[in-house]
Picture 1: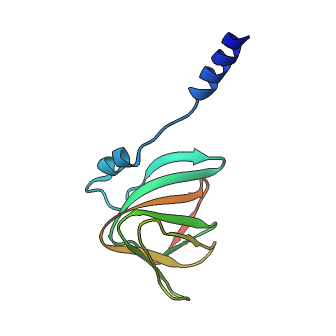
Picture 2: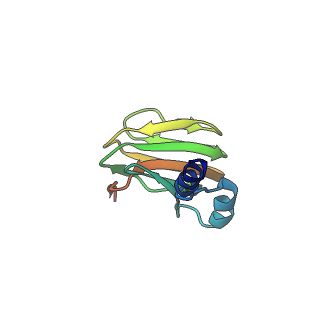
Picture 3: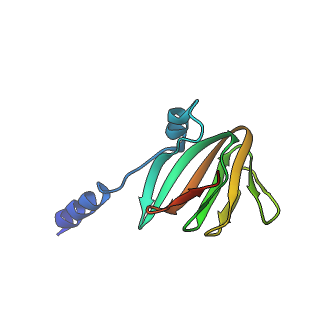
Length: 123
C-alpha cells in the first residue's frame, strides 16, 4: 500500500515544472522587451521580461497583470494618471485600456496574461 502511494506521489510530482527567476534573469540579460515564458496556470501565461527604455503604446483584448520583481517601472496611460511600481508592486491593466510601460533603468517584470491575448498597437 505504501509503495503504491509513494509511486503515485512520485508520478504526480514529476509533472511539476520548477523555474528560477534568477536563471530567467540571466537569460534575459541585454534583451529588453523580449519576454520569456515562465510557466502556465490554467489559460494564463506567466512571462518574465526585462524592461528598459520605453515600449510602445498598445491595448489588449483582456486584462494584463504586471508584478515588478526588480527595479522600477512606470505604466503610462492616456486617460488616467501614470502608475509607478517598485519591487513587489502589482498592477492590473484593464481590458481595452491604452498603456505604455517604461523603465529608466533595467527592471525585471513578471507579466500574467491570457494565452490568447491580442494586442493592438497605436501607430
